[in-house]
Length: 114
Image 1 (cartoon, rainbow, N blue to C red):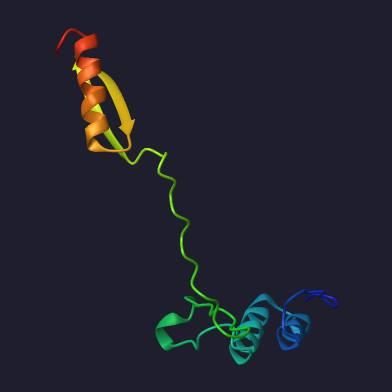
Image 2 (image 1 turned 180 degrees about the vertical axis):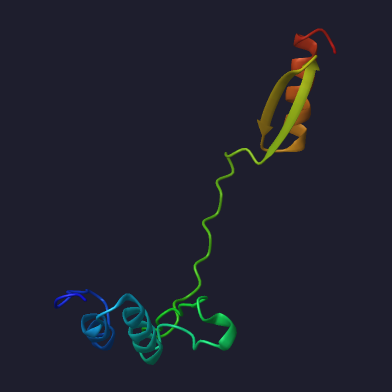
């Protein structure tokens, strides 16, 4: 089907299977069988004929878990939504609930104590 396919990062057995196929069905079956032998897919069962599960390559020892970076203290972590007049929506952000209370009080006095 394909003339000497050049496939990077593909095991030679899978590339050979792709190059030897003459029909689409044969290509699929040869490729799945070669991928299964190379450890790239989980073995198929009767119920999973068209639900093929790829398995990750284990190319050495597992990588160390990556810890997420700490968020800076200057980034707002709290927010509050206020409806001071009808459907006018205001969102306020702050580092703490106390800061939000202060901002809300300032806004309420600015809008007439509503």
